Length: 250
Length: 281
Image 1 (cartoon, helix red, strand yellow):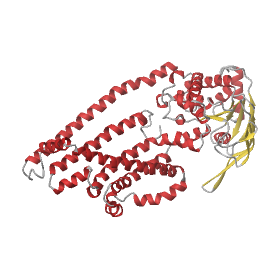
Image 2 (tube, rainbow over the protein chains, first blue to last red):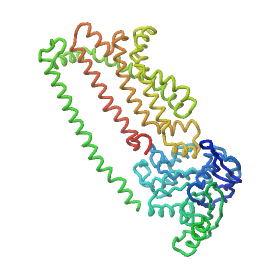
Image 3 (cartoon, each protein chain N blue to C red):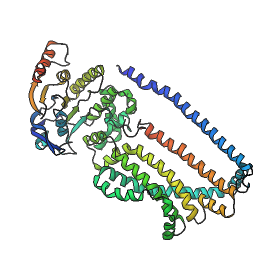
Image 4 (cartoon, rainbow over the protein chains, first blue to last red):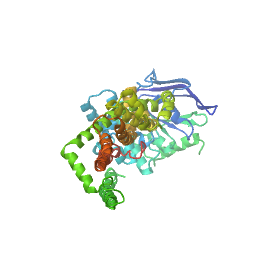
């Protein structure tokens, strides 16, 4: 079910105002099946650009992105995406119908769709809000629906682009615990983009630290702390220190 | 925050909003009724003042009896039905033209480049300016009047569909593509509902224009039935009471669509989805 992701010498250039910008420079890394990988870096390091290439929204100028060992196919490949923006949910659909969308695109019959959607809403703790429209939900709840929506059709990989960056700190902690639980339950291959070191250490099996202008891989740090992780424990703090020193901030 | 407290936070303002929105609906209604009463009283005073003969400025009572007579012999219903049918057929044709073209223009720069110039040229021409030509081409009758309605309503509709599709939140398209929505279902399941607020606004404007155009078109191009025709014929016999009665019917129907039909439509869609402020939340 879960699929591996390979990036091989991925480079992206684009042209703005007749100036060529090298956004991503020769990035290679692999995400193993069911691995939770965090892409960490300062703003402008191209981490969202890399995620957009894995999602198939952007084609690399050079290099290859492989999912499950195969080349990307723009419309058919097998991924769920969670964006930072709360407005990603379809406002004209209830929470449940939002979660059903991917199943609908795969022509799953209505009754089964409904059952699956409710199951995933339960997984993110929103079973009671199935028939509510997105504008009636708080930001954190909307992001939970977005997570349920991105995994309900069982994609092989789950891509998350700073999904909690716009939430308040307390809700963010709660959401990180939820993502940890959901990942342990579903064992998806996850690529999680963040600029928050503590978040990366809390969630990741491995952290790929990126450098900015152009975006390239600076370091890869494996984390083998037992889950759920305790952000106040010495190994956790130590891991943060190691990553911060890689970022040149400590 | 716990789930329970979030629930309260999400539901509680709703309850208050219901009370407020009831008040918001009743107060303007009363104000509107007062304004109309003042308008009627002013007309009554003017009609009975003797400035003009009562034959050309009939008092309310005379207008009412003209209206009652037309209700009694059923003629007003035939006129109204004829006019409404022309508007309905014209609007359906306009929708069939404007929705696909507007969607193409909103999604594809090529179509936008092709269609923008003719749109810019045709849009400012008043539909009634076409009436003599249309009569010349198609003669007096339903074809001519319906065409005028189509012309009057297509452009405001097309413009709103185009802009609505062009300005939808692109994250919805990306999210749908990430879930493997292919081209057709991207249109039917995402772009259509996302643009619906603008499309409804377009229909609303188009209805207003169609309603104006159909009366004008009927004045000149209707063989027998229609509210415009009613006014035109009444002019021949100086029946000011019949003309004013027809105007009252036109106004009431316009008000009914604006205040009841379109508001219900918006409440069932745009307001329910929290999309009242355009496509973005």
